[in-house]
Length: 410
Image (tube, rainbow, N blue to C red; front, side, top):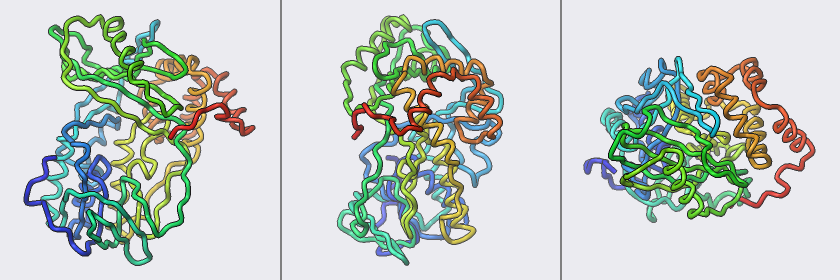
């Protein structure tokens, strides 16, 4: 983490706000608050350092005319890699999706870290500290956070981790319906190998009970992240199977010869369509606990930015963080239909993904996935999909028989 030494602060007894977690959502909110009317307040960002930012990156899409502007809407100085086209591939189809006003983008952790530090220079009461949060307790007038045994009281706590509150009755949250499990390698070749447009989904990989695809994100014609990804309803992560599938893809789909593996990555992204945890009196979830990861795609960065901007705007305008828009319920329903269809009929969903991008302008699809579309546009998009598998899923959901044979996802 590139936090300067002068930002290491002794833990205070009280501050205006505590942000738990220094990942994408914690840093996004810190940056938005530091550029809003909240910049003169005291804000503590607590990060445990378990996932170094230098090893992380986030992909997202947004309209080109809205990217990083105006300053109040997102962080400045974080320069993402930007693409105006991407590929969808199968054994039979190679479809290049060209974008008009939207852009597909990638921001690396070190750039987000640098952008946050730039924003915090104008907010002298903000401090980033290293520590482990073990408890968050809500209350009517203030909340409290326990950091390495030290209690900090705050008017507001923004929790990106989902810390336990011993003052609340334990209630079980619904388990995520599925997850995206990914295994990736950053590869360097001796000759020009990679198309300079990303491949969002390449289905030229063995399919089984899970829907699998490969994601290719180039840095240059000779360096790219190649990532095998599965939609799965099982908690098991058979790494060997994914590694073998990745080997086959590199050999058969890319025809890769001599190459060097620069780094490897593995992870799991929970995909949940249930309502996220609601804000408490003084404790507000952000990031994944707030439902910012879209269940049908696994993407969350742009949603996190918009949510952070809304929280900062509400605090500056009203003194509380509750005047923020919520996602229309119909999108959770559509996400659930898609995940259930992937679980029940993954082979048919491959055709659906191809038709989604081949039969619609790229901007319309991304706007739909961004939950920024009108009902008219959504119906036009849905009409381009093969109806049978989704109608069967809707009938199943209507009768309450969804997921009857699904193993639990822990």
